[in-house]
Image 1: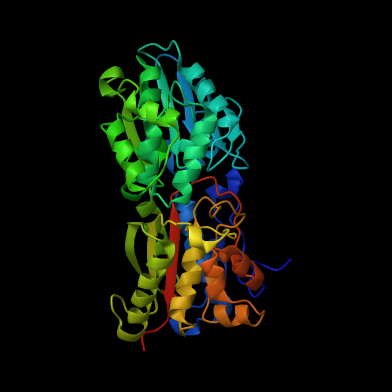
Image 2 (image 1 turned 45 degrees about the vertical axis):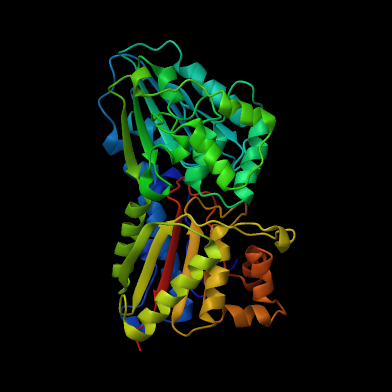
Length: 465
């Protein structure tokens, strides 16, 4: 079987998702050139994959969770959680505390499971909640009922938790929430706006889980997948007090031109009681154990070992994927020809979460996520510019709803597509970037990575000329 990373030139290894191999990466043993002048397409692909994998490996729960654990409590220790990394976080917790009595339940995305013995792992749908999301929310609330002040709740929170753990506010149904989620996704709303609205329509988000745990103490261990690492935005802040109001949620819906059902409008006009910090244990703590910037710094360190100068452009880039790609192409070309903002050989690193807005005139959308759309737009903007390559992918291993994390772009991407009678610009117009990269053999498939620190983008630039 040929490697999807370098198309068979090198013995590249896909990111493993087993707990033992997450503790010890294998990609660092790949043979790579010692001098920048030795770069060729066949090993540039492997180098890009190594940089991407280094970012993901740095955010593995098995590596980062144990150091943030307190001493075991006098009373019970209950573990709850939601997100794409929740199962791996639960497994890491069990490994760190092998003799501590633990019980609880976490929910993760379908296929993102890890083996646990004391903490129950549930699965649910993402990005649109299903009935299992509601079942998981109820199971989590059941676990924290009746706790006392000597008890400890450890909440394992990561990206994706908003959809995976859903309990509609009184008067709303899961169908209402599913319809609203689809509207928010299709209009290109950023994660901050999406989760602000979700919090005011949920009976578990926006600090309400923390209130349900009182008087027990809550320690939240979170892996951030959001720009700015805002605790209230990560999985819609189930353990974090929410200072926003239903009026703020209504403002988002108006700004995004979203027409809501009468039930949702009524729920926002008749808001839930605020569940602020005053209703929870004042000793509650929120700890970030992995963030997009930490992942980018790990990618930068890997780039240095490969003889590249890394430049981190930011970990919170937002906006339309195709528009951001045009800007990035200009930066890469400037580095290639002028050594500004960095002289090659170099790699431009960025994180954050771009959006893809579906417009009525575009017709039915094809297949693809924000990362493959970014890369196709980048390739078109570069127009097969010599000496520039790129990788972009979602750190959870799933770009949008597809089976790939992202893709790789090379100087001959467009010509290889056109050789198959494919029109790259038409594929971009109809949001069908996955299909094009699938045809050219450039998709990056990692499988579920069991973590989530948002998107990782790396643009490699050869020597400045």
